[in-house]
Amino acid sequence: MASEEWLSTKAAAGLLGITTRTLYRFIDQGDLPAYKFGRVIRLKTVDVETFIETIRVQPGDLKHLYPPGDN
Image (cartoon, rainbow, N blue to C red; front, side):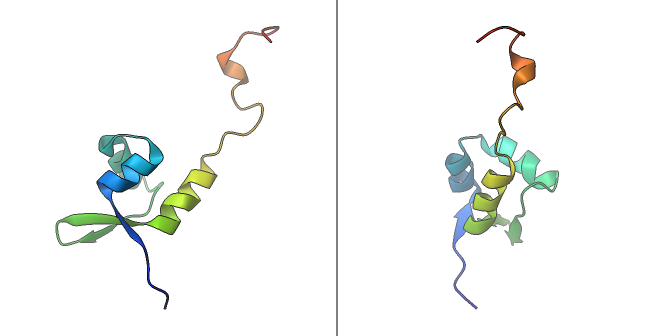
């Protein structure tokens, strides 16, 4: 088995550009896998990278944020 790269919650939140509180919400909702080693929570780098791809904004997803005819 290849060696896994692990991130602390602080490092994962920094990589995602979010607060640790938001990161914990993603973990608690089941959107982002995490692992508890005693009292420490760690995330696999590959899981964070996969999560980033799953939340990618697709063209047309933000139409509700601007009025019709606004170019």
